[in-house]
Image (cartoon, rainbow, N blue to C red):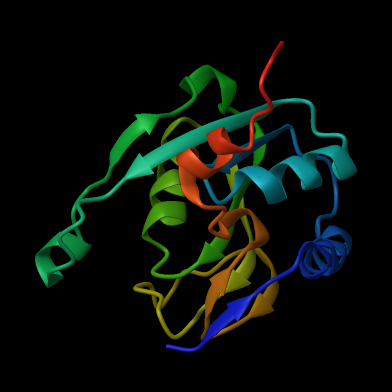
Length: 167
């Protein structure tokens, strides 16, 4: 699979192309961890969305055909009262298979909210959903995207090695 490594400037350009698409007032934003945290933070600041929430979703790591349709484990999810009757922008970095963001969308709908889906990249070649796609997206791709926040920084040991000694 082709791979694209993005810079922070690339991310800025993607966000700049998303913002004009996001019309009207959003009552809340739900960022999917971990990929949606950075773009969600930038978008929430630009749109002045004050109610910013997070969702952590885990799927089985076995990717057999049966497991692809497995129900996710919601490790963290806002209470229904925070989503009910609210236009909620759900943000993630990429729509690959679409499993995570559509699972989150389903939970928001079940809570009585009005979800709209936003990603930086939409990959229609990998999606498992023929009748679902993001409401808003900045780019279409068939590549594996590496965002600047995903670049290997040498792990925790490398970070600790750079901490200056305190006298």
